[in-house]
Length: 210
Ligand SMILES: Nc1ncnc2c1ncn2[C@@H]1O[C@H](COP(=O)(O)OP(=O)(O)OP(=O)(O)O)[C@@H](O)[C@H]1O
Ligand SMILES: [Mg+2]
Image 1 (cartoon, protein in one colour):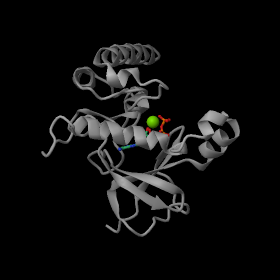
Image 2 (cartoon, protein in one colour; image 1 turned 45 degrees about the vertical axis):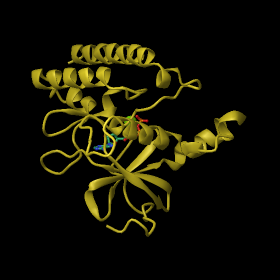
Image 3 (cartoon, rainbow, N blue to C red; image 1 turned 90 degrees about the vertical axis):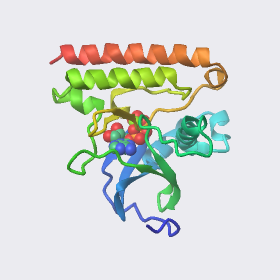
């Protein structure tokens, strides 16, 4: 894979998108996704953001920095050793594209090589059963035991790996101005407990709509 020549993405159709990013398949390797900040998001925020936010050196790439820091945090307990974390998206690097700097990540794919379903997809299509519930409990146990920071534990930020386990593909890190959770494991766990409680409530209400 050529990692040096800037990628040309603007003529391609994104395979997925959220509120902030456009997600493309890497043109040379379907197991890799390329995430860029959506130009519409940039435009909207450039109009609305306060003077203080505009002065941030990292600008709109703040979301990438948050994800990358937590990627490294998850490996920091085992320095100098192979230490992948099955519960968070694997980050492969940063590359230049004609749509700005992009994050290269490993795609969570299903058995057919398509993007794996998110928890939201599973809930919407009646595929959230006993097995998925158990896998989510395992994910929660990991999240509470780990020192990784989580800010957006929403149903579309969790993808179901074909092995059955859930992978967080977005929403890591700390958005707070004062990074209390980064220095206090107690506050971190308390906050994650709240996020887990909110997700449980959301799942319950979505299941009642069935
Ligand atoms: N590593 C991945 N493997 C499989 N699918 C992924 C992966 N990363 C992202 N996706 C898909 O792309 C969608 C959007 O990606 P992502 O959540 O990173 O964008 P976003 O704009 O930051 O989202 P949000 O609306 O939560 O801010 C996800 O909901 C998911 O469907
Ligand atoms: Mg998302």
